[in-house]
Length: 181
Image 1 (tube, one colour):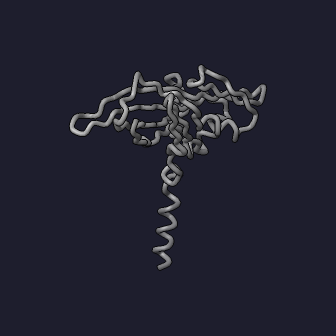
Image 2 (cartoon, rainbow, N blue to C red):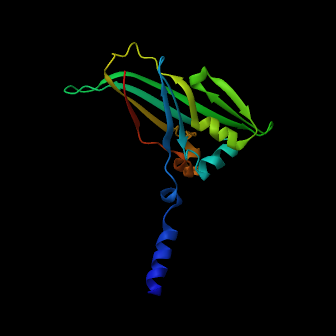
Image 3 (cartoon, rainbow, N blue to C red):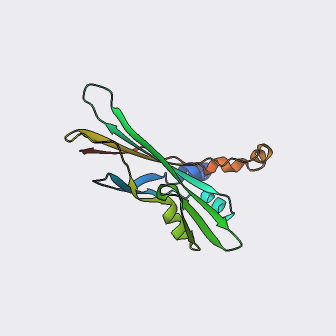
């Protein structure tokens, strides 16, 4: 029995922390009309590795993808539109502040010294306008949302030195919200 417990403890100790970490997901989706706007957050977007990378001054970007599809019963769904934007954070060590650029707000820049506030701004999208040409009244639509971290790209030789940066990437599953126009 002692050997079994010892083996289980050793097996759990050997499991990489990335497997045990929470996986990021889209939460708090709010959809309003007209015009069609969405707000949402990415839960668990910042792992310890990502936090350390941001604090070290490495520019970090989250990409957001929003797709709108018209659901058809007998035919394949129609893609009505696709919107992509990003949030990028850079840490300025001289000023001791984080600079977050929000693409969906016309490259609006938010500056803060508070690390937790920076994390909230990076992981939240508020009032994003999804502007299709028109929605057919009474038709069923699906709004699909996904978030992913931009892969960190370094010069060729630095990729071998900083091999651990590949662990900074994440991608959520598609979050699907169905509604009738």
